[in-house]
Image (cartoon, rainbow, N blue to C red):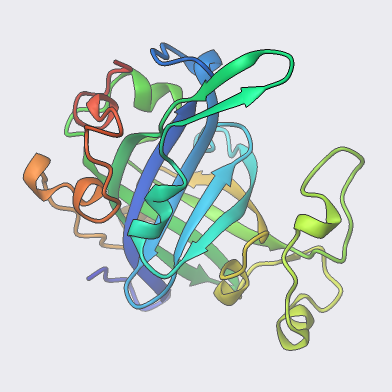
Amino acid sequence: MAETDTDTELLEEGDIFFLFTPQVNEEAPSGADAVQRFFFALRPRGGPVRLCIAGRKHMPDPDNHERVWGFVETIAKDAKAVEKGLRREDYETETRGEQTQPAARPAGEGVYAITAEDGQMHLSYELEMPDDPGEVQRTLNIAPKASYALSVKNPEAGSPRGAGLKEDEQADYPEDLQEVFRDRRFARECLDLLNYEGAEFVLVGARRDPEREYGVDLEAEEAGYEDADTIRRLRMVKSRHPVKPLFEGAWE
């Protein structure tokens, strides 16, 4: 169980998984240009699993305080339900014929905590796998551990032209949760806002050492193939999902 210092409120803790899907028909990805989508999944203790998409196809750079927009694509009761939507898919198009969307690849797993300090939520994590992060993790900016300021966007505040989700794709909050925004563009303290599909958020790179900066002890443990939660919890077995990025940090 994660522990925090007396100035930090622990809102949630659990397992975090990083995944990516290659571009259509790209069964042997070898760099950032071959990545179509980048995900991270949060599996809290005692709550729904959230599959989130990071808009820039990587995690924010903590050193440069980079901002990355994202949204909650899927809310599921258990992690197994998430995996079904990440399998290989073959389909036909009128103009290009048969196309293949390759299966998602796991690129990291670990533990996370969402905390609040002075009215601002932070998402902090520490990797358990791979033991030695490689090219995949460097490309996707999956650091061994990091912390990000986490803010949830008000769907009624509007977005710049061409940015964010379409109106009918955004979260539809009940009145009591919508009031949390108090007409602000972002809410920075209410975790319940992330429990809706279409919830948009911004992550801002904050720190590379959550334990030192925020007093968060994530208690990561070493893991091997038999202990990998990506295999056990997400059912991302190597017969359906290439797992080399997770265990070796290599694309293929």
